[in-house]
Length: 253
Length: 240
Ligand SMILES: Nc1ncnc2c1ncn2[C@@H]1O[C@H](COP(=O)(O)OP(=O)(O)OP(=O)(O)O)[C@@H](O)[C@H]1O
Ligand SMILES: [Mg+2]
Image 1 (cartoon, rainbow over the protein chains, first blue to last red):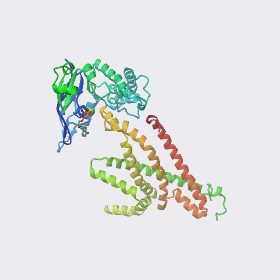
Image 2: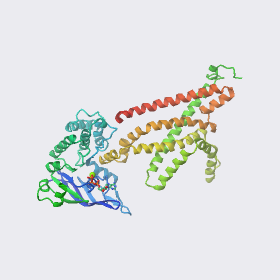
Image 3: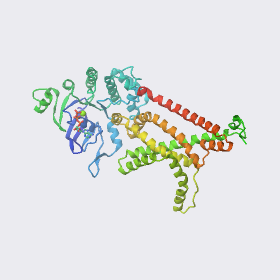
Image 4: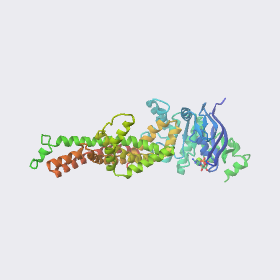
């Protein structure tokens, strides 16, 4: 029995007149590594940002490890979170790794990592700091605890951002093009780290343009096109001859 | 006649000396500036929040406040409050059938007048400071499950503080100097004391020069304090 970590039904989202997401359903079980592929502007980032409610979907339901933050709609149909506490609870079960790292520049590497455990989850600081040191070791950044983010290369910042994401032991990790802002020679160090996370059974949703990574590491490939899931399946199938013609056309663009 | 009294006596703390008056004048000057700064910070923060509000009328009112208070001479605001406040208070009291309460203390009027202007400038500074916090860092805080209070306390405030300290230092210096305008309301702050001393001793140069030195001591001491505070934030920002 594998536990369902993510259950998404009927997500829609428009920006003004532009319908960016047009009804997305997706389930993830513990240990799933789902690569989300698709053309520019197809709605991948918007979808990912709907999952932790950085964007509020217009309709649909999201359940993450048993937590949900129901939406209510005002008279003009605009969505709003019914209960702010439920919102933060749901977010606390997830972690996001951004294209531009988004480390807090006024905090040391260590403080970046302990911030959520201490200030969101109420972990004692000393305990959080011990765990942060272990995480820094794991991401190959031992010895950088006292550094400031600006002193690090892009690849190093992203590895710290991944340590920050791991610090709360999230049920679901969301990656939005984690290697797109990196120098080509720095991409590998981040991908290797993500592969290690996949191997230890982390549940991850990864928006990426790294096709080899999607093929070799993911348990499922999802192709998003025009705000819907055009096709999905295990990588062996999606990268094989029986994949949907639309997806094959996307791959060979 | 004091024309022939030695400087040490005039500036001293004896019966013919103005020392105590000057010191307490400087104290009142600091009090006006501090009060104005506090009022300005409080009201300025509210104005910043109002300007960012989704309620259009509130945002417009806050913007209009800034345009007006930054656009008229400070002296006018001081005069308006000083001469206008008793009338306004009397009218207010009359609404409740009370006798006119008379003039509010000059210190209060002074703090308020300078503070109202200070708020208009501080609101601009805060607004700039808020805009300087990268959106992505706020989203990272949201994604980590921080609520509005934690986001403000842990991410927004420290960065805003770093950005606003230098301009706030300037505003503080203006507050300190503008407090001289309150002398017109009869408050015995440094400017007023030196005017009175200059007049009654007929040694204007001596007393105005002394006032100048005292103002300079206050401004440079506070500049040094602000510098110190700024330096603490520079490590993460990479030394500017
Ligand atoms: N906040 C917003 N306001 C208005 N339009 C937006 C907003 N965010 C995204 N969009 C639009 O929604 C569409 C989908 O954007 P999204 O960022 O989800 O695409 P994407 O699949 O992640 O693309 P990319 O591969 O370029 O990152 C785009 O047309 C984009 O311009
Ligand atoms: Mg995107």
